Length: 327
Image (cartoon, rainbow, N blue to C red):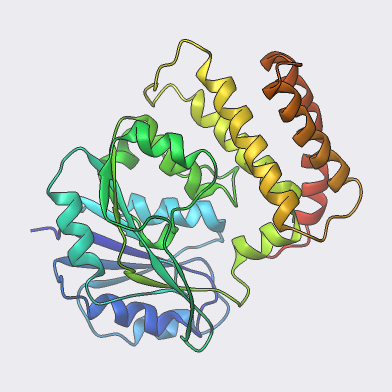
């Protein structure tokens, strides 16, 4: 009889943290699970560490070639058979009741596509430095409600997410053309397909921050690429024939993209200080275009044309920076 939950741990050179990650799964109060450790051609002791665990629920798989972030996540999902799937980063670790509480919520409502939770932000010594708590209390909301909040940025901590496996079957794999927005794109697709979303306000996981976490490093080195990635993910997701439509007679897709890009550009201008020409002027131009549209001085179609031209330039700048970021 197959277990209810598959916990997938994609690994690439995480010898320093992998043992704690695996142990945190084995010590869960909910025990109806299996673990897949999928190594993406690590050159450190990651495989040796995974082999050191003598537990029949742990399955170690080694890729014959490096698949990259999206490729390894998709490999994880493809080998699971359980009703629910979690992708757990190899450098993070679960708190004891994580699976129990998330499983209880998602299994009690077949309309829920995924559940996520708050989490602790910890350093390399496992010391809590902050808490990521996007909402103050537990809830279950419709996909439409979740999507309308989610378009302003990804507040979902990826390793906390427990997904109903049928979502992956119906909506397809993680997009290998994306990097920073890889998970955000998937959550938006699930929401647009009409699935509900659950949230637990009590932190259920420790998310490690401060070492070379690839996506974080990538975004900080290339804020232009961050904007372009999210823009590209939104355009693709809203045109995906496999997802439903949260219908709006006023051209929802264009409006959503404009709202999101405007919001993210404003955030970046306020929060990220180290911009180098021509990035900052381009972001400022996008911001003022959004203001002009809000004041009805520019039409949606004109805004989209200007945004597309600016983002094409940002794409080139992001490509240059991305070439220097190791994945």
